[in-house]
Image (cartoon, rainbow, N blue to C red; front, side, top):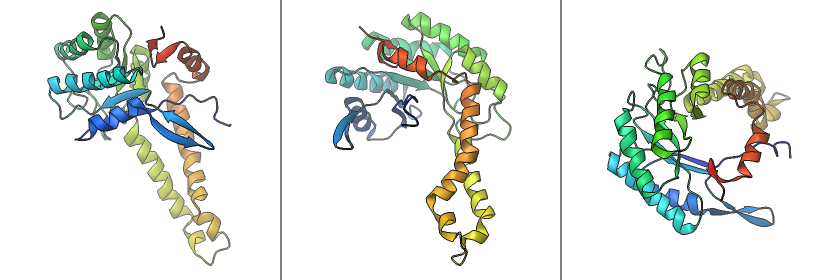
Length: 261
C-alpha cells in the first residue's frame, strides 16, 4: 500500500549462456506467480541480453529469434540491444549494421540501445575519462534515422561517473542507467559498519542481542544510508516526480515506448 504509486518494470538484464533463449522466452511468454488466493502472469516489460561473447550476426539472430517468440505468443516485444559496452566507443557503422538488420526482420522491437560510450562495468578509481556525452546525442540521432522513432540509450558501467557527466547523459538521451557496482558497495559498506558498530550488542548476554541480530536490524541500518543515495541519484537523472507521467504513458502503450494500436 505504501508503494502503490511506484511504477515497476520487470527487466531481464545481462542474460548470457546456453540457457539464454529458454530463460528469455519464458520471461516473454510470462511466468505464473501466486498472489494471495489468486494468480498473476509475470511477464518481462523489457528484455536485454549480454552480447559480449556474440558476433554481430549472433547478436542480431538472438534478438530476432526472441522477437519471433514474442510474436508467436502474441505479446509485445521490447528489447534492449547492446554492442561493445565495455570496449570503448561503438562505431556508427556497427550501430547501422546491427540496428538495420533487426529492423529489416522485426521492425519496432528495439527501444533501448546500449552502445560503448567509454565506460566499463565495475568500479574505476580514476573514473572514466573516455566517457563521451556527445556520443549519446549522436547515437540518438542515428537511431532516429535508422528506425524513424525515438530510441532511448542505456548506459552500462555508470559507477564512477561524476554527477555532471550523469546529468548530461540523461539530458542528452540516456533513459536507463545501470548502477550495480556502486550500489553494491554502498549496501555492503553499510552492512559492515553496522556489525562493527553493534559488535557489543551481538553478544548473546546483551539485553538487545536478539533485536540487533535479527534481519530487520541490519536492514533498517542499511536502508537509512542506501535509500537517500537512491533518491539522490534518481533526482540527478531527472526521475523525481515522474511516476504519474509513467503510468499515464503506459495507459497509452502496449510496451515500454511502443504505441498502442
